[in-house]
Image (cartoon, rainbow over all chains, first blue to last red; front, side, top):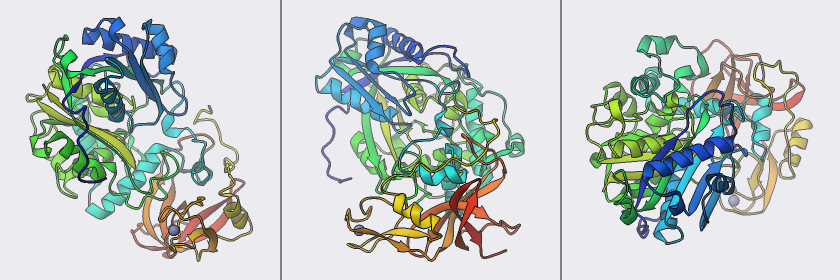
Length: 391
Length: 141
Ligand SMILES: [Zn+2]
């Protein structure tokens, strides 16, 4: 990335204004189209916008596990769309999707866009362990290297080798987030987790135990993006898109699970986009009140804290163990329990939680000071991030 | 989609392609090869139709010694996916070969000695569950 990039014009001029969820479950018994439509309908209602004002739909899918924006627009009875985008991406997409929608409304291509992620991720296609047909899978699947917990565990192990991080550091992330989940009715994993019960959990892919891994669910989540001018008149206070960045790292591989050409497993995309993200926002880590960091697995929270510059190299585990990411800590993090506990909506719910917190609507788990936050999307070679603030 | 609890039979055959066929053919003939760029001298894995370092298109397969050092590893404790091995726990290693490529493979002949980053490993070609694959053996036994 060049350092002298022109600041994107949508920053500070666009906002997230509505949030919609379906129930998260292990078996929805419903079509993905029905889930998608429900989340979008709720998000539009939540924003306080008439349905007729929505003129764009943006979404993403992996392994054809979702439905086209066109179908959702039809089911919602939207009059006419002027902007549609269906992206073939995974967990790196949610913040990037906000960027796409914000760009479109700022450029005048649409006035208000609903963005969604919907999937039967538990009862249907389970992305974490489904084979990707492409040029890289032929080297993984025949040897039994077959699922995301294993791929990311390979990175977590290298991070532990280089920094001296321990199982207890990974566990601290899972324990801190479980405490938040207990205040979140939507979370599918809510039982108490202690250092003892964490260490007593069987390994899934050493160094990961069960509590280090997200839980795949069926469900949908949607958000509405519009211009800040329009947002000011709506029901809830806007969550302003203040900063944004996406990066695909050098030698990022042949598919989204392929790290054979990626040189450094101890760092991910967050360390590559941090400088551009903070420059785009005109803010730095010390000015951020809370963080919603993509956590398909516990280690990616440690990577994010270090990559974004909240702590130095190898310091993230100690930072979490000291309580800094808990409610009332220096940087409350993953305040919905994260993907580890709320369920794996591929990080769409990570963005949604950031919006709810900025809007002051997170109830029992509301962070006391929520003027600014950082959100990340993605765990490995590429990803996106946002800085959201109150208006 | 297969249920993960369904008993696996043979390993899934690799879905090869025109970029990888020559590499697999060499492997089936008992030779471990690596793609190498005639323009910049880089060596990497897996085979690609262009050089990931310089973008050059003059790529050939060269013989690998199979020797390398341990970069990272994961112990697979729970089988996840379709048609995956049932003999958990097993270990997958990421190895940096002396030619400069990073490869992944099953660790064969593991020992009770703790794994150590940087330790020497040697590639072996084995038939596992009906498929010819690359694995690695430890120099420390
Ligand atoms: Zn080259």
